[in-house]
Structures are given as C-alpha cells and as structure tokens.
Image (cartoon, rainbow, N blue to C red; front, side, top):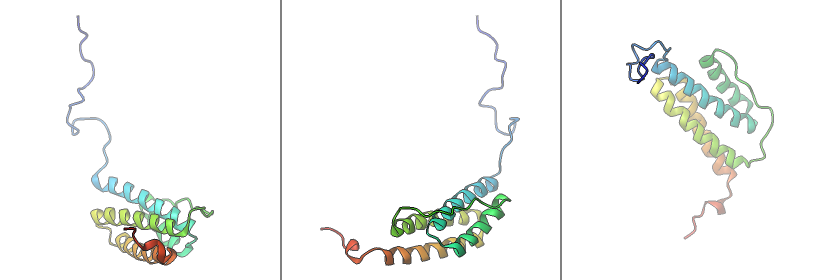
Length: 132
C-alpha cells in the first residue's frame, strides 16, 4: 500500500548529510562583504572617492576580488544618503565585532561618525525641531 522511503530523512543530523556546509566565519565573511558593498554603493553615490577606496579594499580582501563601483549619483538628498550610510555602517560594525575584524570595525566607526556629522550639517535646523 505504501511505497518505501528511498531518501534520507530531513531530520538526519547535519554531520551525516552529504551537503557542503559553511563555517560561522565563512557566513560572517559573506555577510560582512555584503554590508560593506552596500555601504560602498552609498558612499559612491555621495561622491566620496577616498572613503569608497578604503571600503573597496576591505570588500576585495573579504571576497578575493575587487567590487563593482557605482559611478552615478543618486537623486536622493545628501542628508538621506548620509542617514542610509550611517545605518549601513552600523550594520558593518555589528558584524565586524562578531567576526573580531578590528580594521573593518574601525572603518565602520569612523564612517558612522563622518556620516552623522554630515547628515546633521546637511539637515536644516528647523527640521530638527520636534512637533509637539
């Protein structure tokens, strides 16, 4: 009445499976390179070539190949781009800390400081006043 099971159970422990598995460090490298690439894209949109070069070096180190660079500028406001870059740098910092990558953590912290200062300078003072 029932056909016998011919495949391994999905509940087979990962150690017994014939599938390739990545280590935690490999997964963190992939995640960190992705966040850095996103930060690089926003940095290039802002036209910050020197900062972009530093980020690109770290992406190349993690991926083993140089990243694609974005030549164009965005239609978004500089303040919005700086806020986006700040958020991405925060994600980079969290993953770099998990991975114990000091060079990238320092780079991310510096980027967060620079984008915070740039976003506050680009935002008019009247926009910072909260509505009651």
